[in-house]
Length: 153
Image (cartoon, rainbow, N blue to C red; front, side, top):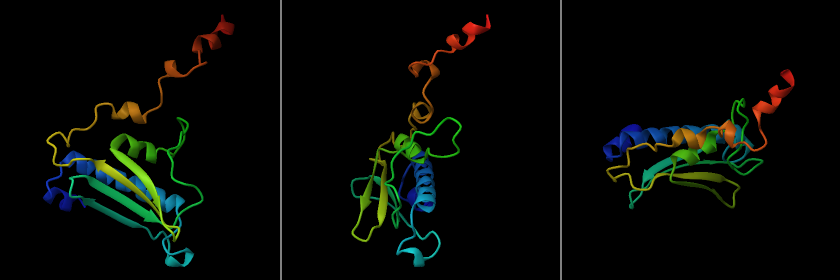
């Protein structure tokens, strides 16, 4: 994937984002989805694809046999060991969504970048950590640490 995208003139930072997004999509498909073609298709059979379309958009998608729930961003606790994948994708990508077909297959598609030939396409978003991280304690309503210490004095 990396070499093909480099040869196409895609910026290295955009390629890094695409690889991370693909990794998250594959992890989610293997953890939450059924194999393609039903239970007899084999362990973890999924389909991954990427391309730069005629408009210069870098698209990545992963298809599995569907799962018990529809893919949606979660709100994991600070100590949770997972549940951040689609939030990471949302923070990195220009757009993403889910497509179902009549066979029950589910495809999560991602527009990694809307114009990989834009000279600024390789610049990472400055606020990435803020969009993926937990909210600041001061932003959580009803949480006041000072109240917890009133009884100690």
